[in-house]
Length: 212
Image (cartoon, rainbow, N blue to C red):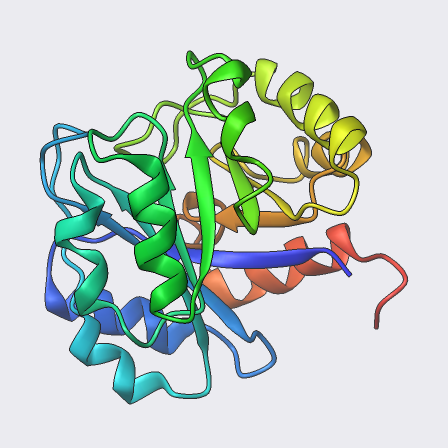
């Protein structure tokens, strides 16, 4: 089954809670985007303590930060921790820190970063997040070279979970699935719509047409 994961990228506590409450009970996963103004220019609001209010959800966090080792210890209730190969910390140490927290280590790669940067790490990680946009904001244009990266990953590591993040919508989901992606982080495609709940259900049906 293709997994659609609504992504929470907000600037304050009120919006953080509002968006989490909008996620229907049939959806089991949510992504929390964490930006501290280092890897990206913007900052986001994200409080690990608030996740306790939503125990029905499984969480993954997307650390768009230069020093993930400083932030990982606070997020003990998350199943997946995504960090960027573009960060400054030693990726081997980051992977080890994530695994010691009993979470899956997922490595993210930006559109302009060559695949060779993550190749030595693929046997140690639990998934890859291919960025189809430059991280830092919602609603940016999908970059087609993400599909090439997904195809390469799927060919070399057919069992590796591949998530795509950025520019997700009705026109890009089928192409990414055909390339080999099986997880989608959707932010503006859900929360940028007039009816986020209906938008999310529609994307889930699009990605899984055989499901009711």
